[in-house]
Amino acid sequence: MEALEALKKRRSIRKYIDKPIPKEILEDIIDCARLAPSGNNAQPWHFVVITDKERLKFIAEKATYGKFIKDAGACVIVYCDRNNRHHLEDGSAATENILLAATAYGIGSCWVAGYNRTYEKEINEYLKIPDSLRMISIISLGYPAEEPQPKYKKSLSEVLHWEKF
Image 1 (spheres, rainbow, N blue to C red):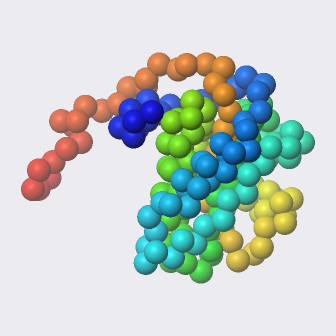
Image 2 (cartoon, rainbow, N blue to C red):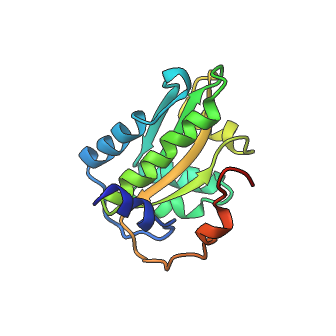
C-alpha cells in the first residue's frame, strides 16, 4: 500500500476476527515505530507487544476505553523514558507509525489513551515496567471484523490557513 493511501485509509478498528498476527509482521510494525522522528534523535521509546490472551484480557479490563483489546490479535504499549522532555511527542510519533504500518499490512488498529491515565500504574506493575518509563499509548492490533465508514472530517478549507490565521 502506498504511504498516502495508508494515511487516507486508516480508521480506528474495534472489532477483530480471531486470527493471530505473524510475529514477523509485528516485528516489522515495531521496526517502523522505532524509525519515527524524536527530539534530538533521543529515541526514548520502548515497545511492549502482547499477544497472550490472558494478558490482553487484563489490559482490556483495566483500560477504560479499551474493552475491545481482549479480542485483538495483539496490543502494543508504547513507553518512553520519563526523563526525556519530549517523551509525549516522541511516543505519539511512534504510535502514529504503528497505526500506519498496521494499515499498510491490512491490520486494524485503535489508539487507546495511556498517558496520565488512572490505569497506567496497575498495568505497569502487571507488566513489570521500570519506574523510569512513562506509558504513552496502548494500541490494539488485529485483522478487522468491520469496515467502518469514514467519520466526518472537517474540510481542508476549515483547517488550512496561509501565512496567518
